[in-house]
Figure 1 (tube, protein in one colour):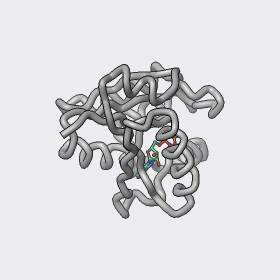
Figure 2 (cartoon, protein in one colour):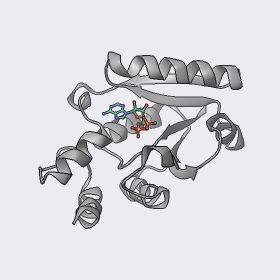
Figure 3 (cartoon, protein in one colour):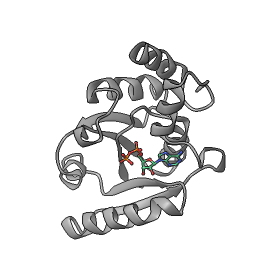
Figure 4 (cartoon, rainbow, N blue to C red):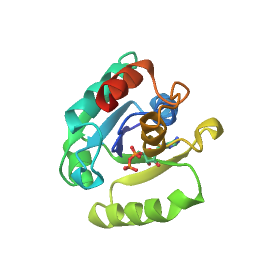
Length: 158
Ligand code: ADP
């Protein structure tokens, strides 16, 4: 049993992320959701807002915590005494980028292992960016994100 870091932008957290986390929380002693500052992605929510939303959503899971970060992922992982990085794979299109990222992280920190979880098939098409697009155009996002997230998205998008 080990401690794992699940990094991402989480702009916002979706049922796809949550499903993966619930499965990971059964396997690892502790899972840290590491919310990347990621200003290059021009997120809808600030890092602090994304952290709060993820915390509200995951508050009933005793072995999952949520922390924001703005440094190198492998440094963050070591600072928190974790030895595993978790990532999700939805489709073949995710693979190339994830493969590069895992290779780079192994090069930077050979003791940290990246482990992939495949998506639950009902969330294979689900991404934070699509949810934002649907919400911006007034579509119903209740099948994709928790209630707390819908309320905050409505506030943000007017
Ligand atoms: P990033 O900007 O780092 O890709 P995301 O917040 O979009 O951050 O995603 C974080 C991780 O969760 C990534 O590994 C991504 O592939 C995975 N992920 C996102 N959506 C899903 C989903 N619906 N099912 C499984 N994994 C997912």
